[in-house]
Length: 142
Image (cartoon, rainbow, N blue to C red):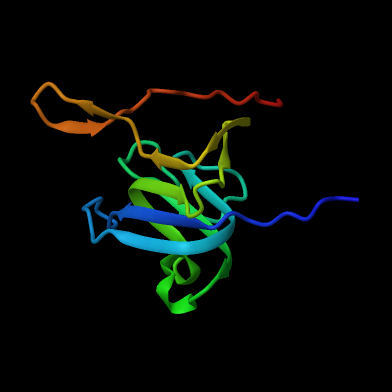
């Protein structure tokens, strides 16, 4: 027999951006449980979020809320897809912890994490997100 699994109650703070990448008002989701939270800047097959683009300075977040205490107070229940510059995820109970699945490897346990693109200083003194010039070559079946 399998032991029952109870999702961890989390507080999520989002630094969202609009479609031009400009910051908008910070969003808070407190005391909710989630079936999954996916954060990415690389497009994936069968992804149910906005198409991710690694050349832009924000991440795509998709959250599937499992259970909430007050539905109208939870942004991610009504707007599960968000463009974000930074995300903070924290367990509501100090003894709870979560694991992260990053590129197929499990990391953790953590009680609080912050996730953002890598920001690097530019030569002109400004800061911008890091870009990696990657190319892929698919085999051709001729």
